[in-house]
Image (tube, rainbow, N blue to C red; front, side):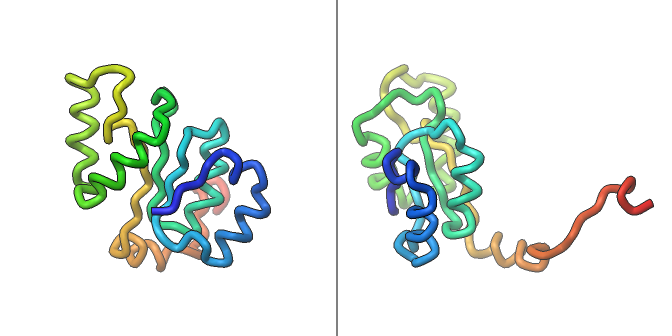
Length: 129
């Protein structure tokens, strides 16, 4: 698990260079919820099939989520459903839990399924006429 902080996101061209050079060759964690999350994901996903970040309403946690992810990595991604249910139920506000994580998790099986569609052009019925 490689973590990216807000400083690394400030210089997107340098980050993209490091990504393309293979510096981040494992799962990537963003240690905060960026305001431009969609752009960040578009940058990261071509280089990492697994990206994690905290919920937008998660409180600053001084690295607690990193520790939780490291401690419970063996449960992921299957353990996320139970963690989300726990967060919706008896979760104590302000306490970091695995349910505070959001993720895109493309395992190798999913990526193999997607490869034939990689360069496929999809048009709407209006465009075909």
